Image (cartoon, rainbow, N blue to C red; front, side, top):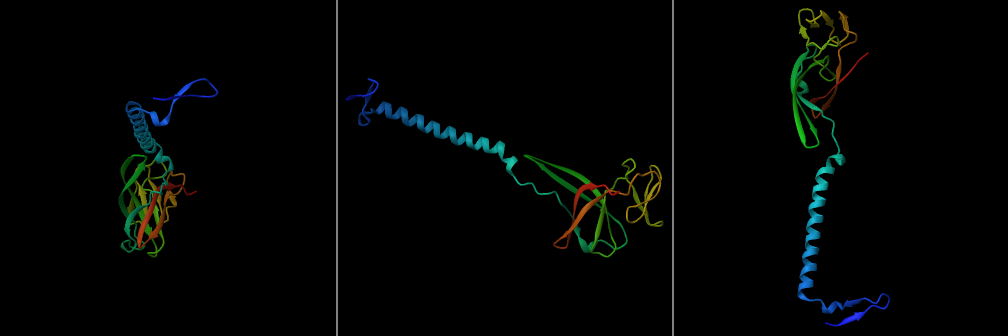
Length: 175
């Protein structure tokens, strides 16, 4: 093997054409290991960091065809709300009272009384929502008629998408 003397430091280096088989295999194995380690590290890092960069859609829930709801008669609709938090998807069963006057504009109420969170029901004879816990009474628009509730019934946002009634089950307090 020929060796050259480096002008500045006095070191001797092997000429590139004189690399032996053992040195070549050692360097090739190290380079291949570095490439594999970089690929695995990038994949692992991407897995853990990716949820931070994902666009999160609002959790609208489909309640059914808009034409299925009778005008002037509240309907209790049960639904399953799915939430995705990074890698975990959780499901929660809930319900909403849906009211429409004309079949085009909809109001969806949270099913809990605004007094202490008890479930209320629709009394068709009195045409009122009645909470049995503390005799709270609400009208068809969710306004307090009598009893201790501090505010009207909480509402969910609604929208019509492709003739389907959708709600966003995050209660909005109405003052």
